[in-house]
Image (tube, rainbow, N blue to C red; front, side, top):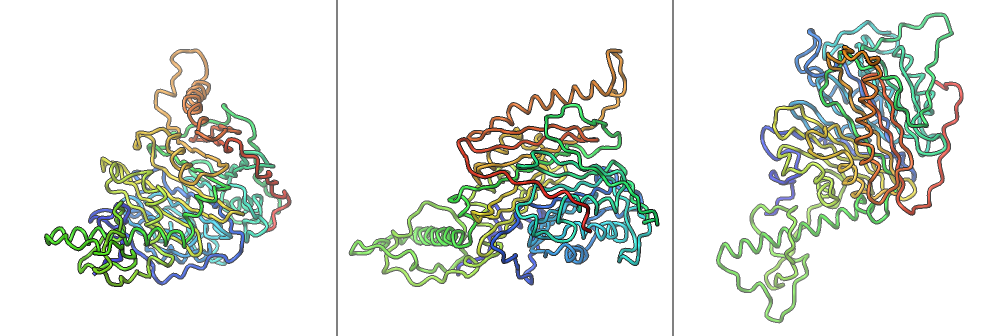
Amino acid sequence: MVNTEIPKNYSASPSSFSGTPLLTINSDVAVDHESSNAFEGPEKLLEVWFSASFNSLPVATAPAGLKVVPAEVWKDMLELVNCKVLSILESEHVDAYLLSESSMFVFPHKLILKTCGTTTLLRGLPKILEIAALKAGFPHVAANAKAGTYATAKPYRVFYSRKNFKFPERQRGPHRSWRDEVYSLDQLFLRGSAYMIGKMNGEHWYLYLTEPDTILTPPATPTPERRETETKLLELPIANGSLTAHDNYDDDHDETLEILMTDLDEETANQFYLDNASAVAEDRYYRGDYKAHIDTKQHLGDINGLHSNDGKTANPRFLKTIEEDVDVFSNTSSDPADLGSSDSETLIYPEELNTEGHPLGTIVSESCGLSDVYPVSKYPDARIDAYMFEPCGFSANGVIPAPTGRDATHYFTVHVTPEPHCSYASFETNVPNKQTGRETADVIEQVVNIFKPRRFSVTLFEGVKTEDDDDHDDTGSGSVAAKKTETVQKQVARKGSRLDQIPGYKRVERIVHDLEGYELVFKHYVKDGWKGGAPRLGEVDGPPTI
């Protein structure tokens, strides 16, 4: 009989080999995407760190940190965010949750939550802090039980960011404006910093982050006056901002690359419609069956009769069923039309390859080239968990163990909204350059070639680690801070020229900013010769509405 499941030895299968990431699929979830004709693709991204690295968990914390938390507990939290869990890809260092609206990654020491549409991500943050305290044992303080939380873990650092929304008027809860989001975060944390990076009347990106060893906001007092965090506007290249490397930072090679793509090429975007994906799957299915048929005939020594006597060829929909497992995802150039019609009977096409779900998601991840970004030839234990939505839309999480097996596991995540009037695709990864052996620009170029956007933005966040001898100025030629800034400037200059040269695109904006413990690079690109796309206005800056 024909095997319609994802084959165990398929290169993009999330559960190919024992001892590698394990996939759990939640078959009870019926994905109910927003039925609106305009879907908000740009995601809200939250990172909550509870220690500087997985090697520095507090003593009283569970050895596995946040990974000890049961999936059901995270699912309850995600109810507040208004999204569901589709599947879970488990590995030693990170558990990757594929959601109905984007993704969540749970490491021992940090949690990354990324959601699109009109989800209410920040409503889940107090619950995340409570879960870290009560389930994982991170240091905490008592919380306001009347508000529904009983403990609040003390995070090490918190990062919240997003691109400008396409349809901000449709957002809900604390996400109706950036000012509302900042206000919501200020209710939890002291001394946060807020930034708007880019042009207010064009493409821009928002960022909120806390200082290392984040201080929680005390309970509300009768005094109404409280400082509201001001959003700083970064429009010009800044090379000597507020660099203050933090001695406790020790998460080696911490870097996060985001590629935020809009106005996708329509023909390319068609790959992410269910009908198109099903057609690709059908082609591979019948080609795979034909190859198995030929292999079986040769094995039996019976290769006669493959062509009919009258020279006519069979309809590829009518092939002889092979009574053995067949790799329905095999990609071969053989032509099933060469099989004689006299030797065929109706083959039942599996329904799984006509409906939304993981099988079609796996097909698309292969056919569009996504699985080649971190190929199994170099990362044999890498696994992709992908999902195709109906009538369109695509999401995928990738878990990428280091080739040597000695370093922590990293991730990438992709989400696609292909409709022409709101087309958008995002790619995010924390796989470090030293592990890929490629420059950041090479990864960007490969991803951009998959989606062919007419414009896209890149954000690159890299940790800056202080060496002990950085604190000694043995030359007497200037301040330590000036020398650190000069070093960072040289690093940016080295990578800047290559990042500015993405074939087929013009870099129209570049901003570099030094944050506490991190270097941030923001760049915006437009396709050569493209004249479309009016700039979007910034959000209305009014008082907080929450």
